[in-house]
Length: 275
Image 1: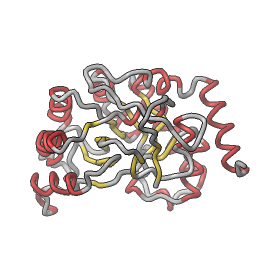
Image 2: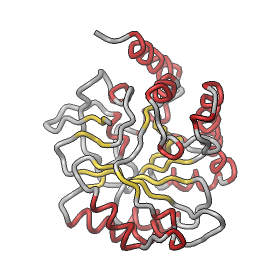
Image 3: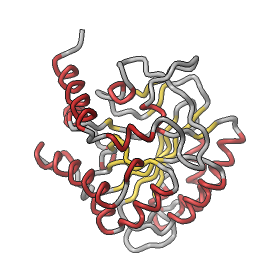
Image 4: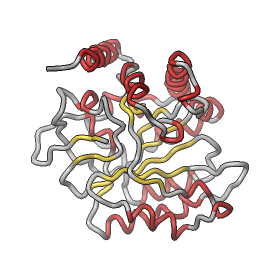
């Protein structure tokens, strides 16, 4: 039997979809993004549809028997590595999901449109990247909603997903419930390449690639960044991406689109995402 809180989240999700607030995300999942590899069909096992199957969890791993991996990028600083990243993804027909802050989307709407035009998914990474534990519930709600509005205003269109990633990946069950109540599933990551630290932080391309490959397992979610902090322009993750993608393929894995999790489809490889 459903708990009261889960039943309430299901009702909220259905209302949002009915109202069309998530229409952009739900229109796009019927097929892979333009120029991207065909997504693996996955059947949620814990709920009536893919989005609701992701509720109630921080989703750091896609539970699947398939040798698949999801590649994701955060954007909160600059877009110094974006052209290189998009070029490498296109050359390998690999999909990705980009989690942008609202402030980034407001200041760089052309970047939002460029990612959308390339066929990749766009996720919500809060507006100002604060520590959510320091905010009130109303403040956290504003962070999520303002980013959704910023992405829509920038031209995210059908690339917009109902996915949220917490700043600093600091989650709590209560805050996940809040995000779910707004119609978003929390998508975190299995491993971060730590390329964002830069050479000043002791990172190298070799180390970034190694961290991604060390985490390689069915359903792994890799986190990278498209920019560099504090005015830097060297983006280790952009340099590491081609080697990482080639190694993933060489080890028999495929890169899938996280939006495939939203499609309840019959198939032999049932999968869902869990902590």
